[in-house]
Image 1 (cartoon, rainbow, N blue to C red):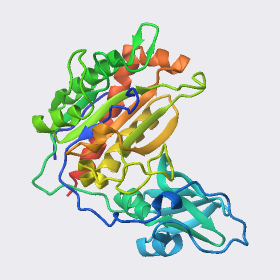
Image 2: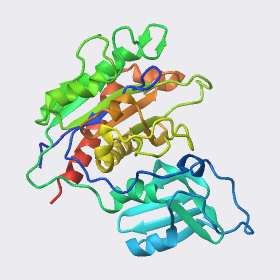
Image 3: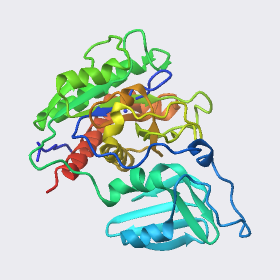
Length: 353
């Protein structure tokens, strides 16, 4: 097992976000390619009446009852025909009828397609069975002799790309400060750490994961802070992203696939989601912020990563209260501590015997 993080008891890009990258062994691809009509099937579905025909429109639909039985999951309704709970050991999944919003052990996770409920049966798309829930039922792990000890942190923006700016506050400076704080914690724990930038310089998005690859990093994490164009006084919270699987629709554009992939980063789909989840869970549990969910996107830094990667949006600079917190060095250190905890949880998962 790699070094242990010991710490006491945030990142947005301009148009596409700059994102997070991490390196690990290539995971085997499960069946994802060549799905016709995926974009139509994954559009948000209206609530169905009990008279609706029991015929799912999802791509390669999997009947939840049959899947649960095969996986040894216990099933019960929390709200009849509205919220379904599936449990097994310490794992708890909650699905919401005709919605992409789900919860894994209390943490919000957005599905690639909605959980479709056609009274009296519920269906999931096969891509979610394999690429969303699969890595939690059978967590991926590294070969026994492989160790992950080199982490690349990517402070979003830089140079001419300031990121979000309000008054004299520039996102690019805050992401660099967060990366340096997190790097210090990881180095104290014995990890090798590389930063894609250590000063205020501009880097193309595609160049950032390449820098991680040339440095021989095992993981890539892109750090950002968020901003809301509308409702800035209300929108707050943390979001974490991993790469959208091939031929699936991203969280922000349900039902539409502009570029299907696969991309280099899709080799690590099973590791990507567990990395993003570990980082997101740590922030949700440790920060006074809202859970805006683990999401999927095809950001350039995630697409081109040759290692497991994630992108963190550690709060909204545009929110009057959260923005002030992010400007406080003590709060950024707190973010760094929670991200370090998340990385440790991920390392323990993939290094387990």
